[in-house]
Length: 429
Length: 87
Image (cartoon, rainbow over all chains, first blue to last red; front, side, top):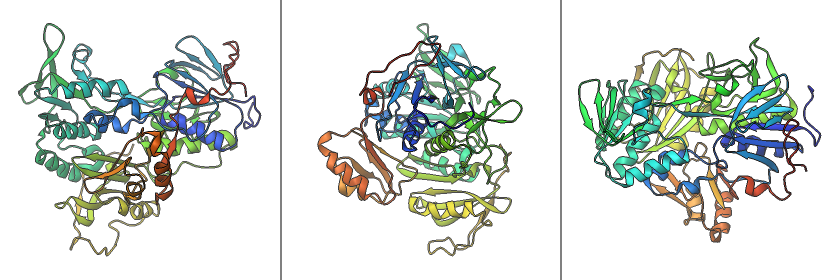
């Protein structure tokens, strides 16, 4: 069957019942799809919103039960929750679930997302008090531990999630140590310059930030409870809560042997969200979207893999279009994400992490309200807006138009003169 | 009732705060916070907030999941064939 689904007997199976899966189902019904939709989820919960988990839920200002996402319409879907997919047979067009059920499909959308990267030593990872934050259960457990007011919280990794956890700890008046292997927090996503500014901000808010440092050992007591952390500089911290915030791992193991091109960056797709097979050919009936997918973006070299809310929603809609109509609409949306931490609204567009130069073009870093543009090879490729969310659309336009960097804005609130800083050039993805 | 704001799209205009102060607030200078599971008594306010949002970033609906999709009982076919809701 190589046509596009039109009849009521067509079966779309969506593996992954989170943000991407929900929006894909919604877009299919919006597009007039009248066939069967089955949503398969490894977690027992219906789709819920993850961003609040490391912010309001952790702070105890929102219940984890309130994170359920709204549904815009009757999806008339069959839900298979708490039942992970374990295998894909492309030839038979079936997905096998954990409980042994086999689901046949005419079109399959892979939306299995990511999971938190675990602490590498399994014995240390198993200590009571060593936690990650990715799922509702993670957030509930960590919230309870923070509410019990531990003497000090250790956060391992100063990316966005780690920095948000540190922010919540300070909001709750808890002592927190953040250990980051690189020279600055958020540097992977925003570059060393913004990372250094973020480090100053964190320290001003009372975070014990230790950069260029790693945790070498987590020590437990006889009852298997975390008691101490040993750092690479020889320091020893007495802690009974450690949050492992070392990024995410894509949930692709179930695709082993499926014949799709899959690696640590996820499921390789074409711009229409069609999964690419081992011979490099896109499959018309198997698609991927959201955190688990990587694809060529016309504005960026190599492949993009984007683990953000906005991409999950937009890519799900492109995938639904491809399911319904074939390869007619490319996924070219710019990566966009946001974070709230230490009282600041942070918004990012494009891919600042790949930039070789940066310049503040509006506002002032000292006043914590500014926009910085990022360039690579003399073109604008990203922008960071702190407490200036309304400025960012204009920068998105500059990125899409491949404007030269630094752009000549003559903004009324521009620093005079504009300073262009060089950044260490990261490798393309 | 569940409320979701696309915070990548949100530009903190704050119109939702005027329309439904029971649900939305601006914390600090530019950080929008909201109650994602407000009481149904604020439904009209929530709908006004959705209509007032200049960037159309607000979604309102019942909580997603199987509970919303059981208007007809699901008919399960044999596992080897397929499983789906017969429409």
